[in-house]
Image (tube, rainbow, N blue to C red):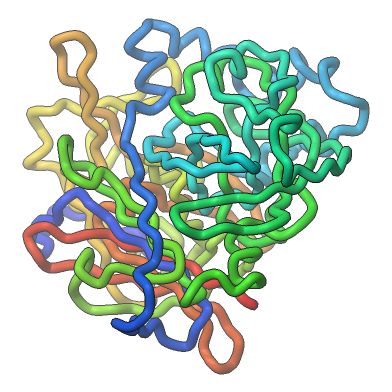
Amino acid sequence: VTDGLTAAGRHAEAAAGRSGFWTWTSSALVRFKSHILDPPRVPLRRVRSIRSQLRAEGLLEEFMKHHRPDAFNRRYAQCFPPGTPSLRLGRSSEKIYNFMDAQYYGEISLGTPEQNFSVVFDTGSADLWVPSTYCVSQACASHRHFRAFESTSFHHDGRMFGIHYGSGHLLGVMARETLKIGHLTTLNQEFGESVYEPGAAFVFARFDGVLGMGYPSLAEILGNPVFDNMMAQKIVDEPVFSFYLSRNSGSSPEGELLLGGADETKYSGPITWIPVTVKGYWQIKVGQGIGSFCPRGCQAIVDTGTSLIAGPTSDIINLQQLIGATPTNIGEYLIDCVRLPSLPHVTFVLAGAEFTLTAEHYVRKEMLGDRMLCFSGFQALDIISSQGPLWILGDVFQTRTTVSSTEDRTGSVLLLLNTSASNNPSISDSCMINK
């Protein structure tokens, strides 16, 4: 048994399914009124991650060698204007943007008339960007471009921005435009037009851009994040957004984003309320337990932009040993697929409640030719914050729990998690956004 994390071979409650649901809100309690128009449902597609695509094409090892943050900085620093903030030494330890393992994306539109783009709806960042028609990178050639000269609602800004991702860098210019998601229209939304996307990461991406749903303090682009603008313009019925994520192949829908509400049919079970400790990422405290992990409690981020659970290197190495995973030469960990039924459970203790993952949750399965490969869903990533090392709870965790957030009368932000006891439980993750 560990302190916040528990790895033991004990029995858990009924095995969970592979779907998840998250809800963000700033009301004291989330109440859904039948007479209010249903919140827009944005279908999310589940696709192979960049990592899986690179592996299938035999390019992953070479890619990882050239895309370590420090090596990437040295190679491409001359391509960016002097003083670009995202290229400062150590920036990669402050930001966790990394879409190597992103699997879910949906559609938005910008401009008048509408120009459509596929984006990752990412709670681990706060910026909106899409490729510009003036982008000169190879990655932009295979994606849709924003054509400012074709839009009558476009407002030029001119300021530059740079974003350092764990798997690549991006440079662009800022603008304001009409944004539409489902039937909701946001006016004068600040966004970025990327003009330079070096490296191979975005070449393989199945999405055009990213729509961040974190707090404003996380943004590289000045101005309000999208959902903050939606609340300010009063176009959502409730200050809530919710994700439903499914890992079942062929499921319908594969995923879904609701803006302004939550679908209570997508989750069940007891509810646990957890304070959001820092309003940047959706950051919460993992409770203290017994053992070597988080002996005094630790901090975790709930992130829809990754499929993995990440944590400090020393803890993850110990955890990999506990589940019998063996390392590869590129930092991944393999597990014998035959051993899955006998692997231990891993439990996160949050506000005194246990959220247990079985091997079916924390093991990622991939087909390589006619071979089935099983990879650990845990990844070493050292992120230091003022509260100590951070863990990241990605889709591996989200497919087991339900998460929602709200603001109580004292103004604090709360995160609500729901563990389902049904045969097909869902995961819901929600974070609160203050008005």
